[in-house]
Image 1 (tube, rainbow, N blue to C red):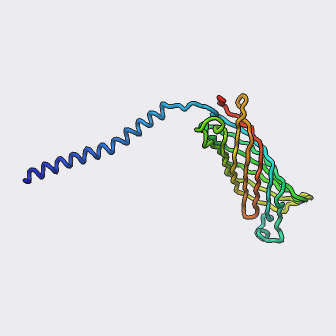
Image 2 (image 1 turned 180 degrees about the vertical axis):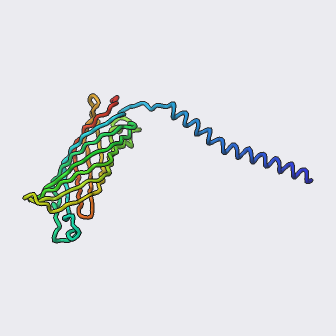
Image 3 (image 1 turned 135 degrees about the vertical axis):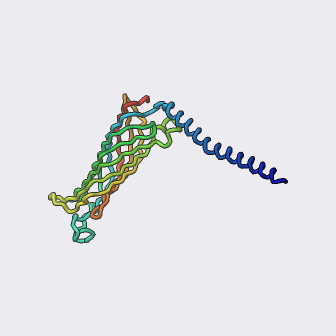
Length: 225
């Protein structure tokens, strides 16, 4: 093979490599552009829930509150420990936000819960994010109304004795909550059904946990049914 043939072959290989590189660079951009165009033109049809949402829930169950006075010398000191043990508890929650899709609602909410045992009375409250997802929505029928709840926020809690004296103070407490919801009944723009929630508040001086079986009522601005 002569030097001229080698030069011509090299030129063809470089040309082919250039064409391949341009194809790889341009193809994804074309696909993304088409995808963006499709997303811009496509408006998902609301089947179950959409728009502004507000809700109210109430539950009964069990709770356990353990804490100390919010003072350095008292925290983790057995002499100052106060506990309700496992006792009857109740909780109330409200939230507002928006259903971004049939299967996702995002908002903010506030919860209060409390319990008592003997001469000890405990209670707490928290404010934070409220999220609801319906991961089985695509299966249709009743699966559209079976969802999960997640809550994250901050609040406070106290334990008092029968005379109203404070025996434990959680100070500023973190809060996490997880649960299940089922809202198969609709009327007007309202949906309702049972819930099962677990909530946990914690800080250096106190922990509070509740498991509540309850009922919820939710309003959706758009609810085809």
